Amino acid sequence: MSPIQLDTDATIDDLLDIMRKRRSCRRYLDEPVDDALIQNILEAGRWAPSGCSSEPWELIVVRDEAIRNELADVYVDLRKYSEDADTGPDGFPFPDMNYIRVAPAFVVVVGDRRLNRTYPQLFYRYDIYQQSMASCMQNMFLAAAAQGLGATWISMGNKMEDPLNKMFDIPEGYRIEFLLAVGWPDLKREVRDRRPLSELVHHERFDHARARSDESISGYVAGLRSRRRNDRELSGETPTSLGHGT
Ligand SMILES: Cc1cc2nc3c(=O)[nH]c(=O)nc-3n(C[C@H](O)[C@H](O)[C@H](O)COP(=O)(O)O)c2cc1C
Image (cartoon, helix red, strand yellow):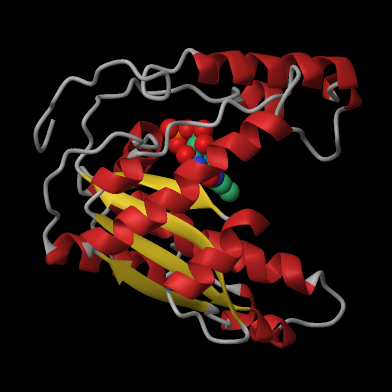
């Protein structure tokens, strides 16, 4: 008996190629992005899986320059909080977020937490809601990459919550969960490796020989931090203008 197949010509190689080559973009060209491309990104978000088919997302498309600048002001201001809070070896090198002013489009990803009640009480309902929101985000992230666009996954925190809710007129019961910046990249980024499967895949049960000690986690985080500090995109190195499609 042959297995049931999806009715598509797309191959796993195409999918893996986009997944491997996608990089976060934090430098954008000051050039518009066609509506059709944004529409594809929204369509990808719409098709994301969600817990109990709750589809808890609402997507606000932002192109207006004044709003983008207002948004940038909020995130750029946060750098000083991060400098105070993120000290020591785990200190997070907060990027220069002025790129928000340049990125020509944003999707504000809003969730409806009231849909938590679609999930069985037995489960961690809030986690399922968040995971559903993240799956929408991931679909959009990949759809941007598949079209040659750069995108940034921008998180939320309590310092930005009030100003952003006000800026986008978010009704009671809804919450902004993420922002997705979209535009043409102004810096070509190297493909970045990931932890190898041989290190992270276990068979049948957790292989304790590969459980990471607290010490190795500390070393790992320190490595991530120094890699981030040296990241060309984040360190302020002058970008090379690439133009579209490169
Ligand atoms: C849940 C989540 C939250 C993230 N939050 C941010 C963020 O606030 N700002 C940002 O610049 N990148 C953010 N990122 C992007 C990660 O930093 C990035 O994916 C990671 O460093 C790997 O780099 P790559 O995307 O270039 O492969 C986030 C990614 C995820 C999945």
